[in-house]
Length: 557
Figure (cartoon, rainbow, N blue to C red):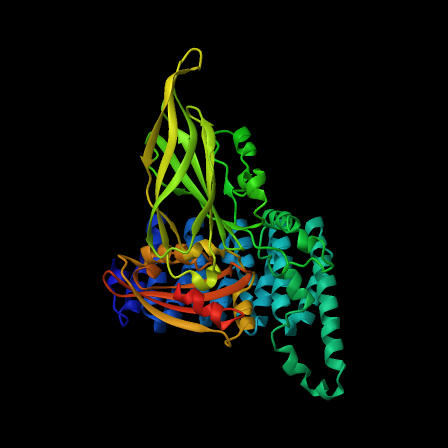
């Protein structure tokens, strides 16, 4: 409470008082102090160095794991939110590696230092402290140290020669994993250094500029940077993307090379809802691709390749007689297939000829229903799907002017069932059941496509097709605004900017977003959300793409 209510001038004296008693506090209270310090940095940016000094003092003391982990996570979040603080913050983390005490925390901190070293110009002051972990740590820490040194060197070409010398010493380690990592890193860095020297010496006129060149960031085709850069997708997504690629007969018959850029974007799949009460059930837990149900039906499979499938939207409460949810399957050729999953929860009753009808439109609508497939039969406690096919005469990108809302009605025949014989009793009756409205929003046309290095991708995209907009929004809190904006845009949140802490929720939040718009257009965005007064939020949105018209379309949505 003292920290949160302190003024900018009183921060130092308050922290001095707290630091004298911090060793006597409970672990939960210590973590609360760290969170308060993190929030103060956002409130008073000019006091960052003072706050960092106190966190370093706390980290150097003997303390529980939770307390030290909270400090490390807080400093990492500082660097993510304010990259200009990276130089001093990373130096504090590297100096405090030994003080982390716990092997798990040391390896996590080493990983964070390596990842964030791309944000600073010179990581050479970090190297002695990182290498010290190799000299003093156990085998897990030594292996993590080798990987961290290699990754730091991939971002900083001017320190590669020094790192190679250190990695050669690591080859004499008695742990197989550490030696293997060191040998691999040495090979990569040696090739990268040779390519640098070849590029420089290819032009004699550049011989005097070697030192200046080495201080620069590595080029995009640098082998060390490419190998150590994270993939922008999981292997599961890669497999599903290749499967979608193979469904396109035109590209399969072409002579073009298969590259990551030519693969179609795919959304994350949802987990099958099965019990995980025991290990066997957890092993059986699998991923379910929402497109499987569409491709399994010949009439719908003939429509072509699905661009993306939205998460399920509930159109009824879970306790009602008929539980209905909808998945929107978006196609690149201006078609949408609405899949309605209907569950019959009424005992001794069987549904037949089950379909969903569109009874009205609310707002702007660019789609016409051109076909439907009904579920022939749904027994008690069973779930079956029925479908509606929509089509737009115009391109979605140019014609879509806002959310389209559909009024829906579940239509079916119902018949009573004999409990013993399971045979129908009496005649079937026609029934209707009103459903909640369904919206097609702009986020439905965007695939969450993460990028490995947002800053590099942002700079590579350039300012030529950049569009900016400032928007006033009515939300009760920044947290509410955060979830609404990310859901509406349908983009992936990069660089850990999806992390919400107490300080961010009370002042402002910066988001780094990436995605692929229908048609294969890569989109990057930076969004700053802040709240100048209660129930009012302001969104500053900056969008980049390969076309200014596309950027304008996204920002107008």
